[in-house]
Length: 601
View 1 (cartoon, rainbow, N blue to C red):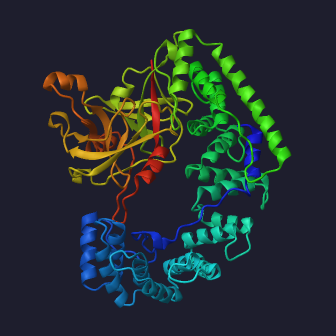
View 2 (cartoon, rainbow, N blue to C red; view 1 turned 120 degrees about the vertical axis):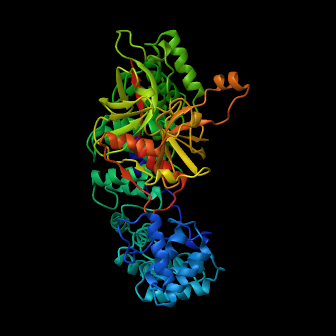
View 3 (cartoon, one colour; view 1 turned 90 degrees about the horizontal axis):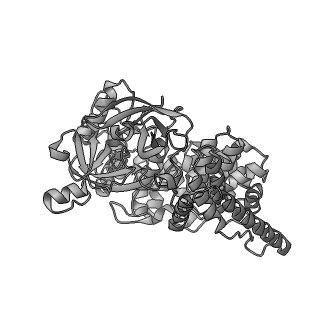
């Protein structure tokens, strides 16, 4: 990434629009968390069903804490279906016994009208009483009502007072809100340094733009001392939150070792993510990396394709909102030079290709659309066949990390017969520890450790036909962990092809490269591993028709038995208080522990 491109982002720092927070009262459903200080006391050896039964029994016997916890479970759908009416009933019973936490949650339900008719005055009264007794969530929610004028006149000063009380108790949402008020100058004098201090307490902000601007502040010493480590931390948080401008910045810092250890593979990963969003500088950088084999296997066709895309873009470095005319003219001239440099790069890379490779590169560039990550097809035109007889890439699939020691699962048919197994974006070779051809499973040792790992459904035998599932993998054009493809579907049968009890049947569309992908439930826990799809031609020949979305996965019981047999430690999720997640959250988590694997022969 060009240094000036990054510095321009700093110039934009103070003119970027801040996204306003939305009042909690606009939500149609309560989304709250259990209060840490009030937890259900259950025996560790009990199953989730037994824990729920005991909790219900205690609640019905009049235990106020159990009544409160049961209300939280019905609010969040933790172990029971979401039910606002039942949540309200249990909170009310607990509140009548003097449970201040239940009183706060009743106020929240009245404020959003979930499980009971919306009543803002009553909500305010309940929240104020609970807040005055020191209930942290009530203090936070009361602050929101003042901040957004929800049933009371807007008063940022009063909002700040309640946020501070909640923050003093460690309420992360309140700490974040205080940071936001300082950042925007609501109710207080705008103070980026203080905003940063409060955001630092939580490690998060509600808007990725805040994170990006905080990163720039640390990088360039704006409103706080320069600190490259802090700058990287905030840029990374912004990037992980989907802030496109941060993708290339994170890649640059990994490339330079600025604020983080130098890592070519990580730099490539983030630049590829930026390139997929149309960043010309990132596309140009990818061209260089594929051409020289820096952080990725050398591929002249992809080098040409990415540089072709970069060269086709016009540079526009004009600063909005009536910026200085001379500065704009200078930036425009800089943009002209950038365009010429990218065109020169494209011409140089084109000069080393055969006619067939040139045609393939042009095809890839012309078919590209925003969000795509280019992948050359196999054969001489792609540049993947080495003229010196060394192994070349013959196929790809998906794998996912299951232990912090670097163990990963994939399909046997992906790695079978491979001379080498590589992981896109990582240096080194993945070792095949063992495989099971009958159940189509393979255990890999990935190069390096795995910080993020999958969690498995603790009771795979209790899946039900019709359950929603999600598949996350790397089909078709994706070649690195920053790509990824999420496909939702349904568990259509509890057995597989020919009533194979080691498989499940799913409706999520499966494409080449999806093999080895994790199949997850709505909590993000793995319930299977994608293995195969029904062969359309064979199906048509046998029955005269083509099956629609007939796909199979190795079921969770078989997968866990495979891991147990090979003494691989793995994590299970789905505790009593776990809750369903959005598909976006599941994709964000799965992207951290899934990888694209390559078979080289």
